[in-house]
Length: 183
Image (cartoon, rainbow, N blue to C red; front, side, top):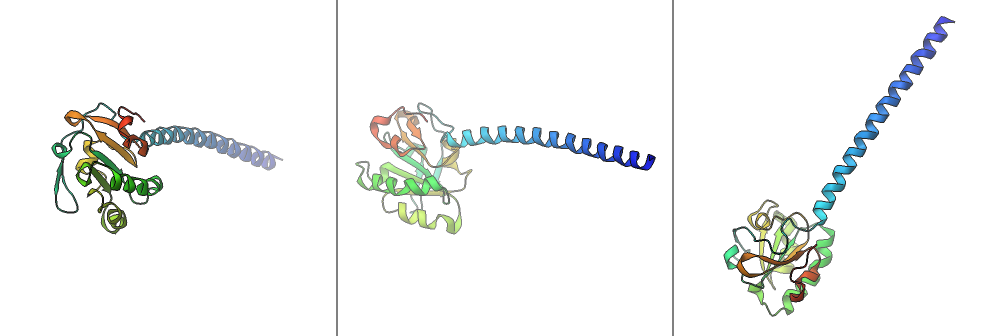
C-alpha cells in the first residue's frame, strides 16, 4: 500500500507543480498582451509628431536626384509616408495618387516617402513618381525621423515655420480645411 500511496502523492505533487506553472504562464501572457496592446495603440496613432509640432531638420534625395530638405517644404506642402506590404498603405495609395494628380500644389508641393529597400519599393515608386516627388528610405531614414514617424500610412500638411498644420493616417487630413486635425 505504501507504493500506491507514494505514487498517488507524487502524481498529486506533479499536478500541483503543473498548476503553478500554468498560473505563471497565464500571468506572463497577460503582461505580454498589455504590452502588445500599448504597442498597437502607438502604431495606430499615425505619427509621434502632432499638429502644431515642428519637424526636425533633414536632408534627403528624391528618386529623380533632386534634393529634398526640411527647408524645401513650403507652407501647404503635403507629405505622405507609405510602406510596401502595408494593407492600409496600399488601399490609400490610389486615392493619394489621384489627390496629387489633381492638386493645385503641383508635383513640387507633394512629397511621398516610401519606406523600404530594394525590389519591394519598385511598384509603389512607379505609381507615385509621375505625380509627386518620391524619397525612398529605410524605416530609420532622415525624413521619417524628422516626422517622428510611428505608423503607416501617415499624411501631413506643412504649415508655417516647419510646423505641421495637420497630420494623421487618414487621407482626410490632406484637405486644407483639415488643418489642426489630430489622430
